[in-house]
View 1 (cartoon, helix red, strand yellow):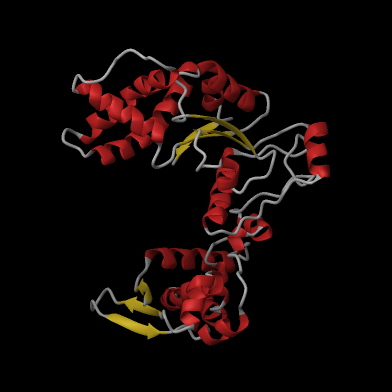
View 2 (cartoon, rainbow, N blue to C red; view 1 turned 90 degrees about the horizontal axis):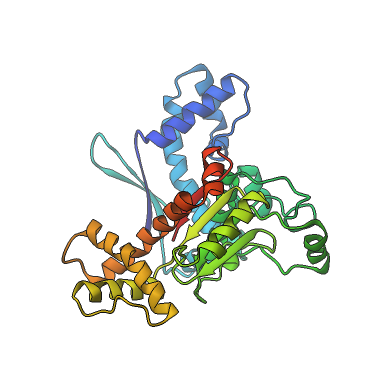
Length: 353
């Protein structure tokens, strides 16, 4: 059973409804995310233009419940098939704040129609190229030549982040849009040059294919990777390359990306714990040992934040997060060009896992 549960006096729906009605009264363009939902409420909405918006807002809460149910049925093939076979029920409900009772609303009135009319996977509008651009959420147009080059306008940090999020959502649900680069695309990258919208400082791990994770095309991302997504032992190559990307190529966003189950961070944390107990070596016998010793300070900071007695697995997980921000701080501290770009608002440096 899946129960989509709304509640009376929902602030989000009421706020969106007020904005919608106000825009309609002023005959202004409506850009609310609730516009599609309220389109189904035209008769009630028209009445609210002369009356109180309370009626349309209260009804919108109900419609929103079934709107969500319909969305799941339309855009999730696994859920749709389980509903068809009788293995899963999706119903709506409304919690009444004043009485504490839940009103069980049953199935969506459109369920039978949706199950009969949809067989193939249909992407949510925000995850398609056209829908994403229309909603200001999905991937930007794929450039003049099908890939990003210097012939295309710069992408703001805000838009670049939206593109990363949308691409990762497509990857996560198994519905990528990126395709193989054609000969003309490759020729365009050579003749016009690169203009990546984002630089990624990621971990060297075969399980984290960065371009694939963000459903990106050649020319979209400027990717740098090493074990532990760190700058401490790679100032010249990592920092210098990021300065080149932000300064010369015009990228407005740098994303420092760690990942769960990171072997480098796990090794560094174990090295820190061994040294803490006096069982480890403080001198590096190899480049790898030098890396792990260098990252042990990050593990120490994570340990201080979590306190004594924390489980090793939890410490490692938290160290991954601390390490992302440690790398960001390193870039801001030791790179004057990057720091100047951030100060002027021409660059954003953010973290992710």
